Amino acid sequence: GKEVRRFKKDPEKWLLEQARIASPVDVLTIVSQLPVVASFNGTTRTYAAGEGMAHVWLDMANRDPRAFEAPLTFNPDRADIVNSVTFNSLEADVRGSDPDAASLVRVCPAYRFVLRMATALVKTMLPDEASLNALSAGLPLKDNDKYEAYTVGQLNIGAGDPIAEAFR
Image (cartoon, rainbow, N blue to C red):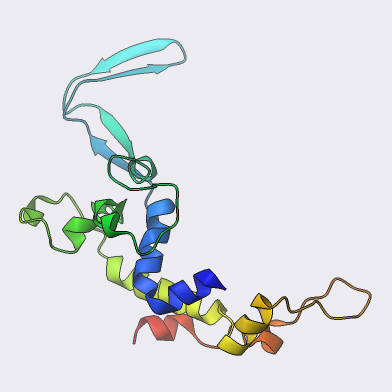
């Protein structure tokens, strides 16, 4: 119930924190500006600057304790979210707080659409407030000799069209 309420309070903050924890773009391949030494099957090769490819693991940057207070804790209210690297860019650059934003390599062109689409999709999966309160209070399974939970319709989950919501 707590995360549902946090999502409803500010869906974008909740989704950006989710993207920090599990980036939608987790690996970025770039042309290295430094020499790269790579070993494959016992053979080592050195690539000159500008010749080799480098893989940047964005998820790892988002777990850096120098950039994030309690980096392994899910916290949609964190002030340091601007340090996260998601959607092929630093969140601070996307928000326009970087005065040299023209130097960005590439910000995901679907950034805003993805956030709207994900918000609409998550909203369709959430229970209404009455059902949420019942679930939080320990709503039991149906009493019928089977492991049968309440259905989507009974909990009012899934009503809505996430694609239509994303285009509003």
